[in-house]
Amino acid sequence: MIFDCGEMAILERAVDTYGVQSQIIKAVEEMAELTKELCKDAGSGERVDLIAEEMADVEIMLEQLRYIYRRENIDFYVCCWKDAKIDRLAARLEGEK
Image 1 (cartoon, rainbow, N blue to C red):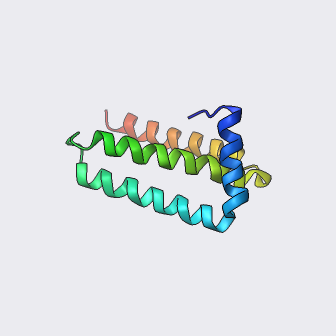
Image 2 (cartoon, helix red, strand yellow):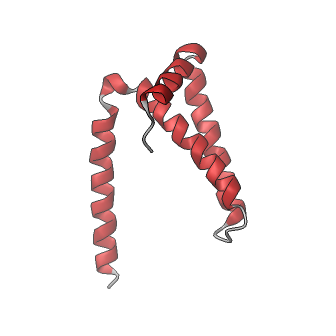
């Protein structure tokens, strides 16, 4: 998800206002809420709106984590891991043919 400059400023302000530790804990809580909704739905599609709401919360918190870990070049590492994991998935899918 791409946030515009105004939205990013709000997310950065949240981290600066509430603190790094608080927002990291909040990110974990939001991911747990998404996990709960996914488990309750289990692919039935009956909880799509609730899942979408929790996905939005998780995406917002992921952007705050990017801001928190920006000095460590987190985006570079995330891209590297995504590439490696997608390559691994592609190899697994190829093996299932």
